[in-house]
Image 1 (cartoon, one colour):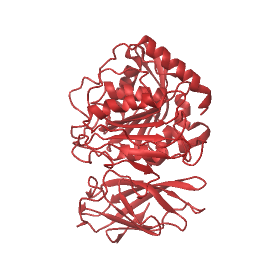
Image 2 (cartoon, one colour; image 1 turned 45 degrees about the vertical axis):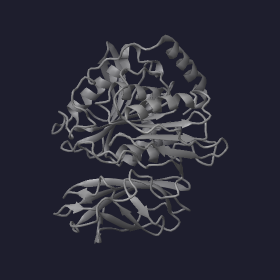
Image 3 (cartoon, helix red, strand yellow; image 1 turned 30 degrees about the vertical axis):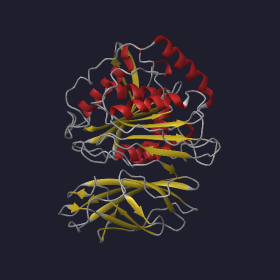
Length: 450
C-alpha cells in the first residue's frame, strides 16, 4: 500500500486543512428525522426490484462534478433481503481501486479485510477522493457520500439501520466527518489513524465509534486520534478514562471498551505499538493486511449491531480494558449468553468460510435455522482441526479454545426464527492445518454444512 511514501504528504495535507479550516457541510441525508440507530429496521426502495446497478466501477454527477466509485454487490444477491452496507474511504494518495482489490495484499485486504470475512452478507462501496484525498471543500465529499447512498438504495435492498463507514488516515478523517454530520445515517464508524482533516459539522450526537491508532504515529500523532475518540466518549455518555496503551517495543496492542456508554452506542479504543498503518501485526514491526488483527476487531465491532431498535447489545464489548491477544477466547459484546437454550432443536445449516495465512486464520460461521420452530438460545458444537487454537471471537462465546469447542449465543442474538441466520466467527492460530470443522451440531442436532 506504499504506506511510508505517503506519510509526509498526509502531514502536509493535515497542516493545510487545519490552517484553512472547513466550511459547513451539506445535510441532505442528515436532515432526515428517523434515526438509523433508534428506529426499527427500514428497507430501501430497491427492495424487490431487479437492480440496474452491477458490481464494478461507477460514476455519478454530484456537486457539479463527475465522481467515480466502486460497488461490490454480494454473490447470489437476493432483492428481498436487506443487506448491511459499508463505505470504505481510501487514504491520501490511495485510490478506490486499491481499496477494492486489496493492493499488494490481494483479496484478503479488500475493503480493509472486511469483504472476505463478510461472506457475501454486505454491500461494499469504495469512493474515489478528489486529488486522491478527502478535503471535503464546501462539504462536497459528504454530498458525494449522500448521492452514492441514494443511488444504491434506490436500486438495491439495504437495511438502513446497518450502514457503516471506515477508513485509514485521510480516509479515517472522512469517516470521522461522516460520524459528525450523519449520525442518523451511519450506525457506526471505525477510524484508523485519523485526525480532524475533513471537517466535523455537527458532531454532537451519539454514533458507535471505534478508533485505532499507533502510539508512535509519525504522521498523525496519537493525540489527534484520542481527540476524535473523546468527542464520542462525550456524545455517547461514556465514563471518561485514560485507557491503557502498550509500551513502545512491546509490539502488541491493547483494546479498551469504555464503560457507562448509552445502550447501543459503544466506544472502543485500540492502541498498538506501531507507526502510521492500518494493518499492524503483533510481534512484528512489519505490516500485513493478511495477518493484521484489525480486520477481525472491526468486523466484530460492526456486526455486534442487529437490525431494529437500539436496546441491546450492551453499551460496550466489555467493561474493562483488555490486552490483546486476549486471555479469553472472546472479546464479544457480552461475556455470557442471556438465554438458556430451549426449543427449536430441528434442522440447521452452517456455512463456514476460512481466510488463512501462514500461521493464522479467521473463520466466519453463518448459522441458519432451517427448522419449523424458533430457537431461543443456542449452542453450536464443533471440533477444530488439530493444531488450531482460538485467540479471539465475535458474536459468540467460545470454550474451550481448541479441540471440541462450544460457541454460545450472546445476549442479543440468541433468538433464531425459522429461516433466520446469525453470523459469528473467530480468529485462530494454526500449525499447518487451516481446514474447517467437518461437522456441527446446534442444540444437539446435526447441521447441514453448506
